[in-house]
Figure 1 (cartoon, rainbow, N blue to C red):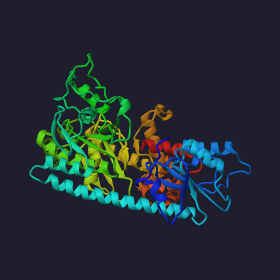
Figure 2: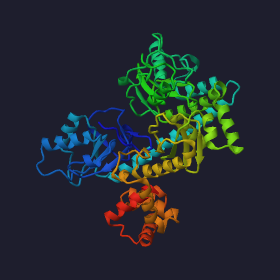
Figure 3: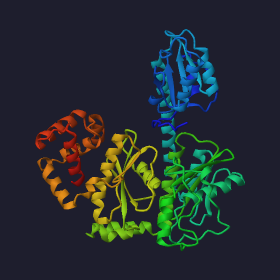
Length: 543
């Protein structure tokens, strides 16, 4: 079953929808599993609804698509397509087309394990959808309240005289489990909450090894006594937590032919390591977060169940622990402070970049998927997920500087644009690349888009000087208006879509139409001509 592209709202258990007395819904087939959840409701009378489903839906149908005399074969094919698309359940409306739910449909749902819900004549599909949205809103409100209270308690704990144990105690209480801070050498520095069994403790220590980012001083050849990470088949590892690690147990560059502790060994290891990983052992949910200070500290949690908001709460704790351990146990804080002072006193970025720990960096622009603008805590959580503490909140966008060689993966709840690796003198250009990548990612609804992620093209065969001259001449009529240039570039990149361009630029679609019309007039070009579009796209790529 495919993973559903779920919205940023908590799913609703199907049982909660069935419990609504005002709807009168009744499950008549399929498993009575309390774990079945619904992400949204969708109405369709298509005989094959597969192309229109994203997964996780309660599909509502009155059976209009059912032909006269339809038998078991028709309903078996219909239900199998719903299951293949990842549908959560099927709601069948009784009347006006069918007086009862067809028996063959009941049998098909029972055979394929798809919950079948009877919708009585008095209940409209709109009422079912509205009830689902109400339950989602209630769950979302409860989740936000829980996360807010946890953030406040964690921040208060971080201000206590013993901040690290206090943060761990609050985290363990909020998750209802165990929280452990591991040091760079894998030792347990502090812990809070009920002590789990030996099997869980060992598994959590191994999971911490999966995400630990080694520093040059901590890279070492593994000894037989080192805890070994779990196999890739049993570990979900990501940035942070939704992408299976391809080889989490392999230490890149630590073989017999590679000297331990070499710079290449370190960069390869950093690139191969996720920033968080999860596993389930003996019914206990295990999660490990690499702290953003880069010194090898890891936060591990073990909880008997996973509730909505747990990941956000743990991310906040990871940010606080990164600050508490980074400044105290490494020189990174002093290096950043020194870099800032030198910049303020007139030094060039290229001169202070080595103080930050690298020569080449990538710029990441991130924007939360919700409507609210990011706050400093959310921005710090994003930086921790990306493995960097160099974070800037610029209005509705968070900018993060990430060392080249560190893997950047999708982050749940965020849309990201990533620049190419750049030296300090090219950071302004990298900032523009990341901004454009973010705009296109939002317009195409992609969680992460990288700049320049393409194979060689025919345009690469044109000499750069000639290409630049042609681009300047072609775009000269609009070059004095950045708004027109950006609008034309975005519109062409999105294949002339008015709505998606408006979303990418945060303007009204009529504004997009007016700007494109103005471009056509100034350029004296027919923008409906594909050859003209190709020429303009070529020029904009060079601009």
